[in-house]
Image (cartoon, rainbow, N blue to C red):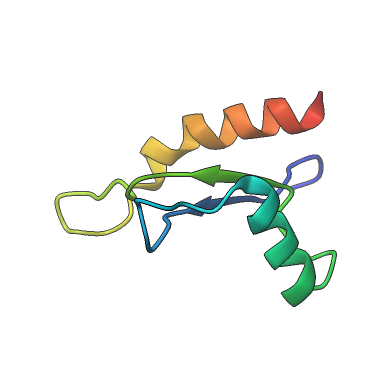
Length: 73
């Protein structure tokens, strides 16, 4: 929708040594076209799952809204 920004939720493969947001942004800029790169990144320990083992998008919505607020400042 107009006015929304792309938010990527990232779960690091190595939880003991997670990448920084700057490293993730650099990785995206190297591999993705500028219009495809997410505007905001959120690091998570794990993705929330529903009872059917699918990603629970509703529980990610507050984190996405918070990331959008920070991006717009």
